[in-house]
Image (cartoon, rainbow, N blue to C red):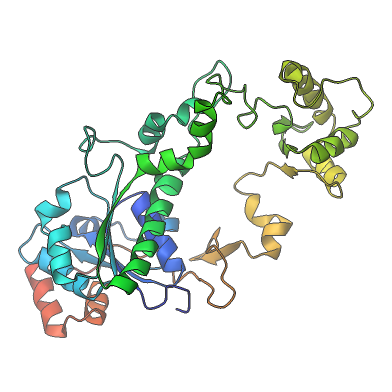
Length: 385
């Protein structure tokens, strides 16, 4: 592959959520990522069945390794000797008990960037507690800020903890670690926690709250649906449009387009008048269909977009023009991003079946044919039939 990470080799110890998503990002940018799947996942795989995470498993090969059998850890350590980075997403201490912890791996390859992905971090009173995206988001303070006034907090899917604060932060850490290792010749361990990442994504809001410019009451702030000029409105056909006319110049165009410019309305930043503005905007938007409003706003210099469904998004004219979705194994998936002018990223291939490439991948990573045959016979590694 010719992406900006071409030549980088990564070992991904199979996990769920942010680890695979991080590995997808690295693969999309040209890294050779080998996923080490658990032997039982290989044996239990149902032919023809796709993992629910298949879209984030794209672009790398899979080798099945039984880390609980004698020699399993040695297989991974042999891979580590050739790798630039490793991704593991177990609870603190699990990798060490399996014999593939940082000490063992860095002893084999002192230049290795060892990326650890957990929810709570490697230490602290919650380090061993189970959790998922929503729990980390809850402790960050951000979940409390999302949702309707007087209602319950609403999960923003699993975008903040798993992907933004988890996988993307880990990918940034690994690339930063690779950059530093190229200069120093030394690897290091990355403690990447979804809680830390969620906190970091919420920097603006923590800053606003601590300086008295953010209220705890949901839908009473500028960016949480409280401002009438920043939110979604239902249209005549039961669909939705989104407006984000924060700046005065965009707000003026919004009022003109809605036919409200000459009405005696509260000022844009008159928070006491926001409920009235909400009512007026909602009433006007309900007079036309979503597509009618798309045409009305098409030539207007303001911040407007239709709220598309997941089925509609790949087919929007802008996404089509930019090839924002690419077919992978018969399914449209978001294309690699960001876009590099000279060394563009690309999807290396579809999601692998667990253990699909065990023999070939191990040989490509330095194992002899005889070694692989012996490991298969011992059950230390497993090849998908």
